[in-house]
Amino acid sequence: MNAHQGDSYSTLRGERRRMVAAVVFDMDGVIVDTEQYWVEEEAAILDEALPADHDVDPHDITGINVHEQYEMLSGEYEMQVDREEYFDLFDAKAESVYARADLLEGFHDLLDALDERDLPLGVCTSSYPRWIEIVFESNDLQDRFDAVLSAAEEPVPGKPEPDLYERVADELGVEPEEMLVVEDSANGVAAAAAAGAYTIAYAANAHDGIDHSPADEVIDSAERLRERVLALVDGAE
Image (tube, rainbow, N blue to C red; front, side):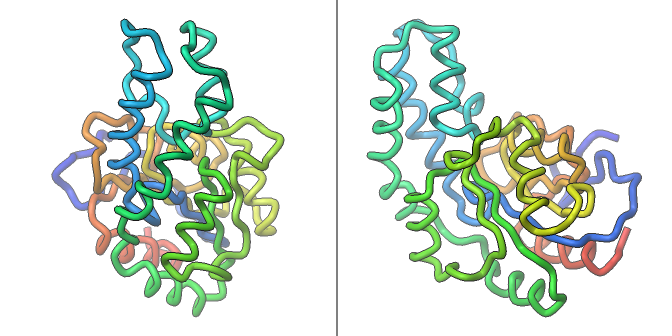
């Protein structure tokens, strides 16, 4: 079944019913609405880092760890900056991006409701530890999660490969298939789905044309996302 963009949510491959044993969130584009700002900055960064005639769309690299982006791009283009200079271009923009970003509406209420259900909670992100710290400190998210994984610190392939989600499942003490994951980018959705997690694609900001087809559901509002996460945790279809 194809997703309908105008619907609050749509089932893509939701034929399965399962018990949810843990809930995991991506950070950029889900917990905080940075993705639209990163896409703007990435366009300028790509123009600086790649030859003038490149045809890379910022959405192609969204959700991928910065250093893995460099490895991918350098295999196709003559880079105009080295690996660490490429990271520095992103790091220089991080505080500005996160200063503009809003926390997902009602996110603390959602976490409180999940805590009441005694579910382990995780974050699985391609962002760097300093960026995670900025988000957590500015939004009072310290100590709210049982596991926080940054692709930059894990010795496994990042998104869109499933390895990060397999690792966070291990840290949370559940099987990947027992997780409910909320992702937004095509690469993140692909990673969560490949790990076997029940995957919600959150498509509220800057996601026109993004491939969310591997997801079980696509949801385009914060209110509906909160409702649906709790419904699935409580055993709804």
